[in-house]
Length: 127
Length: 109
Image (cartoon, rainbow over all chains, first blue to last red; front, side, top):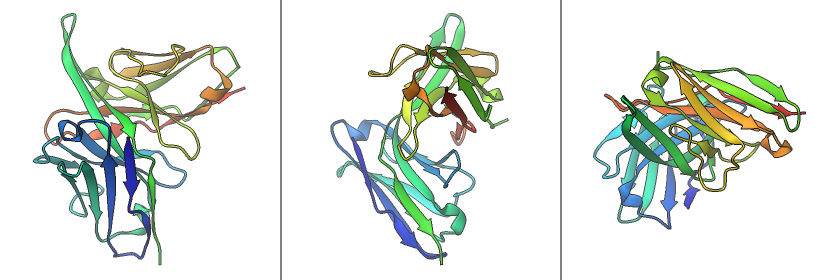
């Protein structure tokens, strides 16, 4: 289970930190991601982090603005959002990632998927 | 290309079969996974890998892949299947970007 917190209302230029607390599984063994959805829009991948936390990955739209991190001793994922703009207004979801790779016949194939997801938290950036 | 393109909307009669697609060059190398999202709810994984369903997902949901296109099929659509559906893929090279499709709204008539 993933339980999110930390959303809310913030003025342009402000900062906010989202949290995603995991329970019921070995949090430290999994890659995690943040995904957002602007009002009435589709899903947008935001950031990902490796199981140990050493490697982080970002969408171009948030690179240099958002920071993903994790505390494996607290089973918690974070997203620090700085210099927020109106276009960052969205519901933010955390999601656990799994992946597989191997041969299917003679073809090398890879797959990844997101499951489970947190319940989502709304971030509203407005003056 | 890093884009995953889906048709915007499709309708299906109750009990009939519907297939939606997700197209992108990255799908020549990686399988897409598929997510169902109902209004006000978090997305739910329905298909992953070659054609795998998580526990609790009805077997009327199936997936397939050919070339640069992944497909999700609902055989015998039910009213509760009305939702937005998104494909998703991760590129495991370099910066490991992840991509969502543009989403398809399925309406069950």
